[in-house]
Length: 358
Image (cartoon, rainbow, N blue to C red; front, side, top):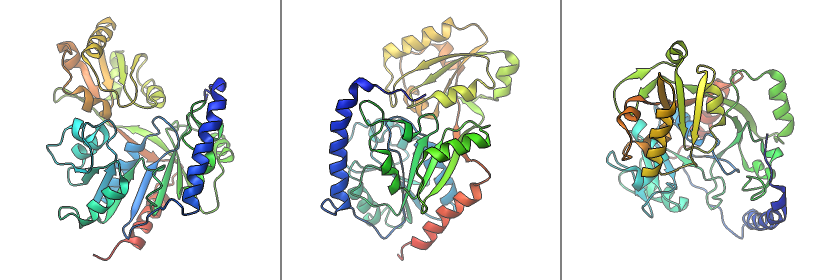
């Protein structure tokens, strides 16, 4: 259920007035939005917190990278560098941010760049010698960055926090009013339960003001074989059920609710240990993780996300027991309702129709 802090509603009115003025200036052309002669697909949201952007960006990479040279441009949230930076195999998480680092590690052939100024970043990708042959640019989390007008705008909406039920910051978690969804080419309701029924789809459809020119899709998380963070071992979820294992679910992501529900399908005993999104782990956190695992009955393991793995990998102070029993659970997404082919076609058609002549 969406939690609203109603006592903060007056502040939300002020915040909303500022957002409305800004959007009106863009709509009137007073503040310019720039288009580019290259296919640009933005994946973003209008809420604070995780809606599954990275797994959806990775889905698009898998869809497009076999046919086109793909680049991903992110602001590199919480990185310790400034300006434009093109990632290399040697780039660190501190230099480019945890999500760009994760993408570069998984897709080394893809150009990954970071720049808070998306226009500058796009122009560097299009002009620099190392990247000027890029054919598609994926913008990560640039829905509010209206200085760029992407050719294809994907808005992600969390199943557990539908925007029509939410309020503007700070009373709710909306960065913009629900009407901002009108800028989207496609709306994807993310983190859906895998066994949602037809009535559940209809309820969501009725609550979202989908325009005739928009596409609506639903996606769900799928999970791959777990692998040790410090080691070469792998583990199938069914093994945990058979062993009646106790799991410490360690997450520092925007909204781990759906992941926890999914893990509970194959594990009976779960203790969540939750940190803020993009959290940089400290020695104090290491002590807390050590103690939390020690308190669990055996057999026990830690399950964490790929994004957290990037931040845990070099954390000092973790016990040998933690390092031995920590497994990473890779997450990908599936398009639901047998509409994968339809979704893929909308993306491929857009890229094919708008590719530039180099």
